[in-house]
Amino acid sequence: MKAQNPVFSQLHKARVLVVGDVMLDRYWFGEVSRISPEAPVPIVKIEADRTRESPGGAANVAVNAAALGASVTLLSVIGDDEPGHRLELLLEELRVNTSLRRDASIETTVKLRVIGGRQHQLLRIDFEKLPSREVLRDKLDDYRQMVAECDVVILSDYGKGGLTHISQMIEVARERKKSILVDPKGDDYSRYSGATVVTPNRAELREVVGSWRNEDELTQKAQALREQLGLRALLVTRGSEGMTLYEAGSRRHERATEHEVIDVSGAGDTVIATLGVMLGAGMPLDEAVKVSNVAAGIKVLKFGTAVVQPKELRDALAQG
Image 1 (cartoon, rainbow, N blue to C red):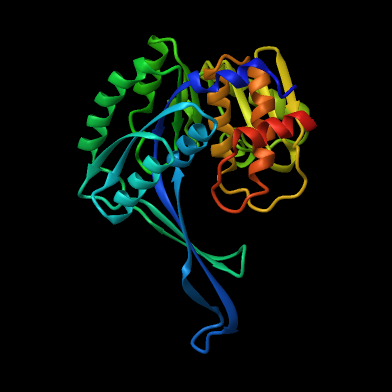
Image 2 (tube, rainbow, N blue to C red; image 1 turned 90 degrees about the horizontal axis):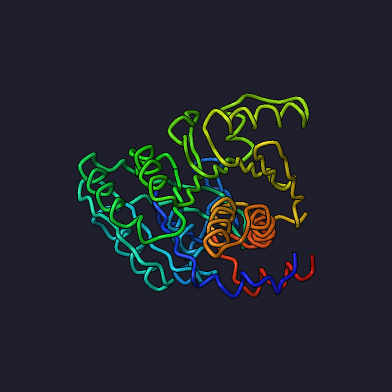
């Protein structure tokens, strides 16, 4: 793939709607110099100037898409609390249009990671509560109005309850002939029937179809799932093995572009965001998968949830 692909000059024309479970990722960095006398655990001395916050979950998908230059709208539910307000501010700074329903009965999901030294994660603490059915119903009404204004719909399912009505969302988008990308969760993929592309990682796929002994058996199971769900394609992300695209009668494998890995967190968000933006800008699916694979290789060299900039992507493609 050449970096001068004309689609790269059209990324700003891609209109992407991201819907799903959002969260706030918080990082506390500190030094570890001794073990606690109360229990066999390290004591981490946190310094006030060594903290970091970034959008997580579907919000990270939206931020990744916006970083590539697309016009991005994020639809989700948050709590009426400090993390929710902070998440809104971060998204505004990162050029993401938002339609965030506030539910005073829940807490905005927060993932707090305690990091020892520079990059050694010692602990993660999750704060979460599922949104109420009433707020989700309101969000579905919003979705019906917003989907007409986009080219691509990305449904980012983190299993937190924000996509209770995902089957109806897919149906609405299909009626309007939109590309529908789904990052799945759980073992019931029937609710993703009719999507354009579903992007499970290796472990998520195994949870649905069972294990496989070799590449031929994996292909058989992946193609059977794709046909069962009525998908145009199934894209399986496979970590250090790269990713494999299964379409009717074809299998395309992209090898991983980087062997060094610093942090895989958020890599799936980067993949589906890049795929959505490229498709929204008019790139064919097989080429969009190649670009998404390169984007994943860039992301895993960065600590925490992070974005890939267009120049980074163009330079990496030029080297490949």
